[in-house]
Image 1: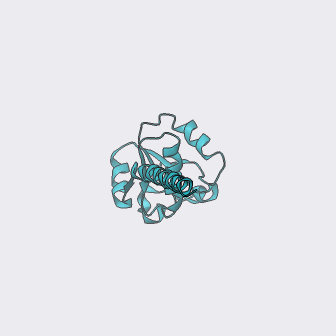
Image 2: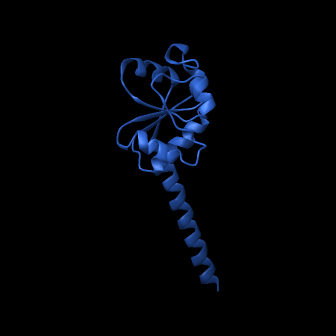
Image 3: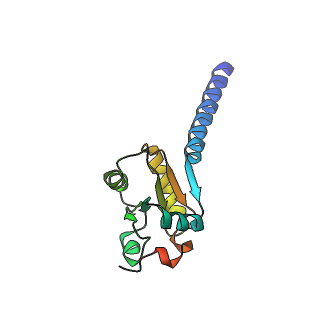
Length: 135
């Protein structure tokens, strides 16, 4: 009886370790970029940008060149895959402050995207000159 408990406990520990190891690897594969660095980068390079806020937030203003894909929508990944089918190319992801974009980045990595970059601070920290205002 004691041996069975020990085996069960050992199995639970192994499973817990494996699950936490996979989760930490996923977060490690998501790069982070400061909003100021992102603002400079997109003025120099043509990059793939994903705005994961709601449609109303996107309409009120967004980063020029960004593609809308509401992370709270059930069809979020379908939308992302329809506009960015090459999962090996970098995709910069932002939201209002950074929380939803990290959720989106995690979903994208699980779906096979290999180069997802989360913009820290979101659109709130980005300079006005790279944004549209309800255009």
